[in-house]
Length: 482
Image (cartoon, rainbow, N blue to C red):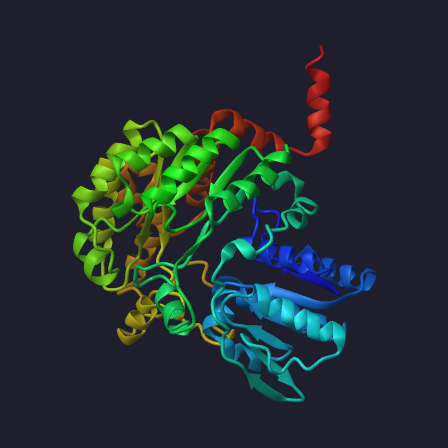
């Protein structure tokens, strides 16, 4: 059976969606074909007219849910497809099954759930009693509980990266790998708490692949010469020092591609940093979230002090590894003063890039319920229908000016961390209405940092070169001959 995956932002940067690739890899091993397509109606419709696709599958966060629902409704008007939704938003809002045109909603881990659905549809067998699925049939919704979590991640085939290489060759200089699933922490802005509740008594939450399995996957990546960089997307990559030691030794011996990873402050030790450096780690991404220690520990439930963060950052920078921080602005109940504390802490850390986002309180998280109880949500997100898509903050600020300051400060944050002397000027500028100049400045600085500061310089040049149309590349090559 053929499955079509429409994807928004397909050609933006080097987007590769690991969930889709992993499910596609499993389906492929059982003889089922997957293709990715840009989530534009005409493009998807053309694909459906030319190909024998029975299932259209959407993997969606809350951010994209409304757009996918609209696209699906339009497709269902013309094509006799079976449409399914999975990913973070459907997992926590399976009630979206009641939306027009939605045939199935997958809750939780989707690999074997999707395989069972495809098998049954191919064989003409019933699909209403498959674990992890809410299915609508003849107007009736059949709700099934989740199956146990995948205990041994090594049993999963490697992700099918070819489905993204074939449609977006310009985005193939980097690829993503995951070695761990699950998280023991309870950050209030994260889905993990709700996920743990969903899988109560359904298996071990934290599972890690064996080092040999991860290295085997990376060897297949290395054989594709287009990949120059690996990004390890685990939230808890540095959780086990023993596993880390085994992995970094094997990576240095067999892979030797530059890579980056996330790290949590509590797990950063001198030994771990040294091992990562020797293996070829070029960038570590550390979550600061807020410079207000009270908010960090009480509201976000991240029990780390400023001193621990500063110590970890020093170790990373001393080892010669690029440091990127992640931060959150526009926190409910806080103010610009709290955002300035976040700036102050980052200015002390001197990261190579200070990543920042406005708080988006996603449904299913504690921070969403906290903001809702306080009456601080300007729009609600539920089963897929909502007033607006989360592009700007959905937090209801005390005034229009406070919202303007927070949203504008996000645009300047990374730049002012690098150049603290411009803070007085920025404080004045953020009072202005949002405008294209602010957005353009933010985009230019971010791209400069991505391609020239936080990845190896030669890879940054290659990534920019790959973005240039082939016709322009040929002209420049001819000119270089003269």
